Length: 277
Length: 254
Image (cartoon, rainbow over all chains, first blue to last red; front, side):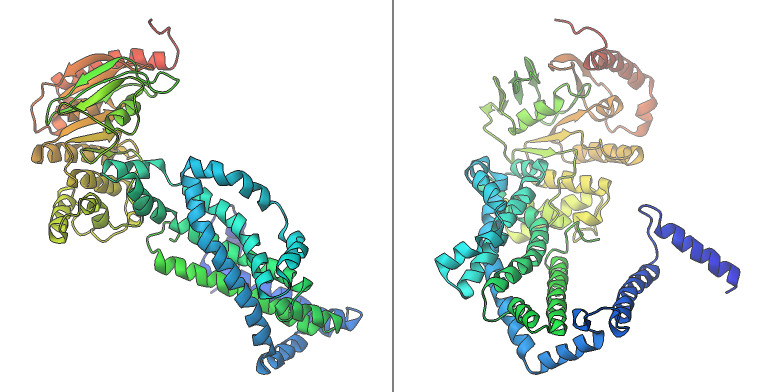
């Protein structure tokens, strides 16, 4: 390939990448992503290995983080802490889902339930869960249940409103069509409303489990024996920033993983969903 | 079927209207936008309750929506979680029809609308015209007494619309049903139906009735025939007056 055509193509790619709503080939997209991540990593490496940050322990080098991570995985402590956090999240979040989804669908579909629940839900939604932690500790004590309660409160009220929104936006024509095919009011809920809300609800589940991590870490920072949050806190006390980074990276990876899992689930369980192309 | 309707909601959508449609007749209602023709159809479907007046089907007053009055909407209202076959079978499933019978009926109607081979496709994989064909098949497969159609081809491009119109007339001749068809397209109304009701601007009333004495089957040649053009002219004059009223460009008569 001649040098002239290379630079023309290069300029074309650059132009398209910066044109609103213009697609670019996957390979180019991937290159830019890798480039950006590489740049960040390079910056980190430069600052840490180059000793530009003082005191040195403020920014651990990539090797320090990696070796800490490997050590903590091998001796089982990372898995233990991670598992403690994960089990709290799954329990709290699942509880919230089991209650919020049906109630949300009711709230979004029937004015009666909307009038019944919405004022309370809307008010509680704005109360920061972190501020409620002292109260919860008072009521429930320290321990697994209290942290589950934090996750539950944090996700339940947001989720119910999001699900209600999805349910309220099911096209009225869809429901009317069902009526003209002979569907009774009860069966409209089971046979039309619920299936119609599934893609939206699935998306909401994916988003809220991500939020659950933030609430958990706060809860653990306040009071916990085990968990990634408490691990980070203790590492801070020992000035072990490499362990802190391990904790952060682990949390990030777990969140990323749950996102991927939900996107995959969406595709498998709801192949008909218009949200996937 | 006979219906007589009055006001709908605080805005008088339809006022003092009386219509009578015989079995297996294909009638259409034309009028300017906002004249209440959709409201009228929804009242017949039982989706909206008239403030006064009633709708009778075969002598009995209707009470809410039901499978006896099937409807096709302008927005494609296919159930996205069901395949083409699943959609067309929806009504039969509700009636707890036997599986073999259900499949047979569904396949029949899917073929009638020219979608054989697409039974297992999801709506998201279909074009607008195809989706509307499935909607029609779904409504017909449920064997309603009356088929109500609310500007079903409005969202389609001109070429697809013509094909769909021919398809619909063909279907009606094969399996005759009472059809009430709403449109703002005069050509469509005259081409398809045996009788055209012209509605006034809001509050809607029947201004004029036109009997379309063209024989079936109707091909596209009809569209340019002298008789057709004369009828179209008559409707156009009537509609234009209403259209202008709807745009409030001339005074509405008391």
